[in-house]
Image (cartoon, rainbow, N blue to C red; front, side):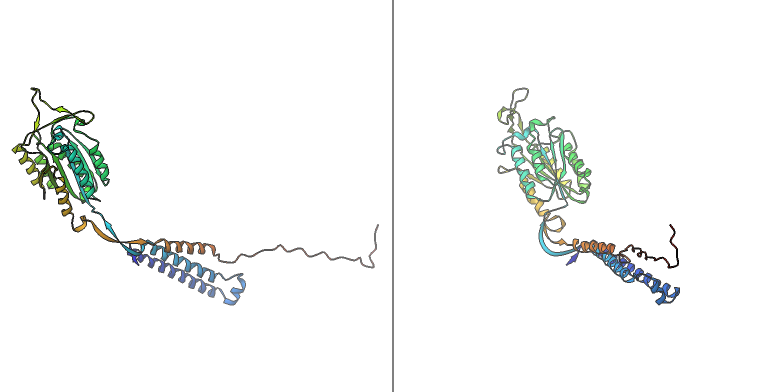
Length: 363
């Protein structure tokens, strides 16, 4: 047996104080009767002595008050080991939806593989809260939630052809991830990560400054680099999701995607700008997201962020609380005096009167 809030037991002192007040009141009442006159004569004038009934009512009230505070202390019984998933961890996944993600150097395509591995990452980290950012030239976001399946569904429902603005803006993606974390009231007390999955570089903004801002907020930024310096042709995808050809520029030449040395250096600097950030590169037909997943699992081992077993007890406060209610009902049913039945007395029968012998009858 244990107590969830043992400090409430101090409230039983209130019950003892209440009992002491009732006891003092009874003693003072008895002394008042003694001062009034001879106790035997006073009792003769009383139809009933309520002292015993009042004593029972006082005992019931004191016990009910004490039991109410015992119930507030949350008595608990039994103990069972329960696996508690990782908590107080927030992860924002920023996934690149530029049209270059249709490239097929990662089978069946970069974007298809990235979505599948993001879903695996979410499933492998139960209890973690996730947020989502889908970006190309602009960014769309999904707020922080403990429903990882909703995040996976958000990414599955978007295609690069759905993005209103083309290009790759890492600045807007990181800025949207920072806004998601800053707007969430719980996130400030949590361990925070941003996973940036992209195959391009930012030519317009300043993603490094945003990454430094995230690092100042003790948010770790991991970067998943898909693609390298080898040019890859970009397929043209129709409305039905099938390849209809290859994308061409205005001169009719095939459009390709490759990451320059400047782009690789930019991605590396984004990861280094935050504490513990790292860059992983796609290889052997996978994006590398599973490596970040293993990194996060290692980071959450031990301490309050990891999965751990806790001993859970069953609350049994309802028993003392129910007994307190019963005692209060009994106290309310006890009156100061028993109920008397009053019977209306029948008038005595009229006595028959006989006329006196000397009385004369008048007609």
